[in-house]
Length: 261
Image 1 (spheres, rainbow, N blue to C red):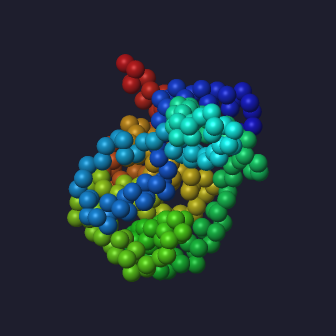
Image 2 (image 1 turned 120 degrees about the horizontal axis):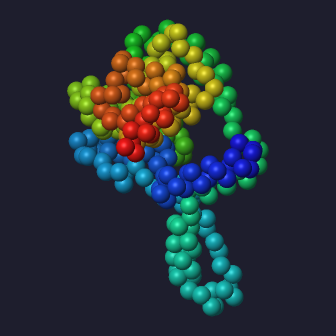
Image 3 (image 1 turned 60 degrees about the vertical axis):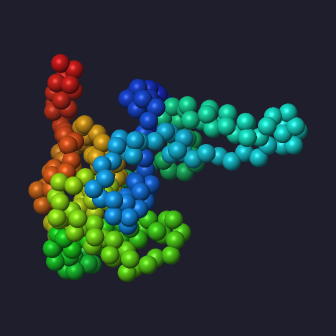
């Protein structure tokens, strides 16, 4: 998005609708859900606060080293507290400014798509059923979390994690436990299993948005292709989610009109 007028309009809309909050990253959610899985806290109800954070938590708090002449005038702890408070009050749109000023390409929906389709084609015969596809994607997602954290992989424990999660979902289809991992592994697993489906530009980003928004949002606006994928009865996302998936501009307008009546 390079048009300045459009960017400014989007920033205003984001700040108005976000009310100073944003949905925490899928990586942080995966870590939290993995902890709940390993401590067997799958029946605990999660509140909205478990999914939301402030923009500063998404961006990260920079570390500032004060020069000695400032330390002589200002207590460093007091300065750091004031600095954090100022960052905490930043609007959500500050992330758009940071991303807009980042050097290099801003967005590439085609990144990784060819590799996903190549890998899918090479290993299609191994995915004998949907559960196998979901298991492989769930296990791979957990492994990716450990890799991103710089932690050693214990394949036996990770395999057990994936089996325990899928067993819980099988025994309690309406359980809201581990929603981020469940949504991502279900969508990717369905793609892996269905030989007629191919990844399209933007699919990975759509999957992440769905995994972040569906557990907490009242409605998700998207295109019909993705809406059809989300509503596929084979993965049964509607069994544990209350979010309404709305596709098509007319349907979106109708939904919004109904909300204000």
